[in-house]
Length: 150
Image (cartoon, rainbow, N blue to C red):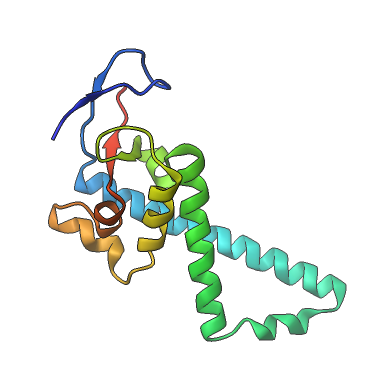
């Protein structure tokens, strides 16, 4: 489904919005998950260093089991929400030249991004777009991922 809408940051002329391919979407996922885990690794090392230098290394014992899962889910929500609310793109979308827009092609709303980020916490959501349809986080938030015109 192609529609003509204008992206003021890219061009003054209306452009046809082309849905991102399944390959681009999968690339977005792989890049984003690698970026997220690398960021978590850096955050964990920094936290360990700070706690070690301040003599509070035992605080790391409190981040185990379900608590660590909740922290991870919260950090993943923050990763997607902050990047998409500020730019409409994650690191993966930046590298694959795609972005998120509302279903009608207009700029994202904060509410849609919040719902989109929340829906990403649904188990197996990351693979819901592989059937050729929009992913669950797209469907529930009424958004879509489109290619950025060159």
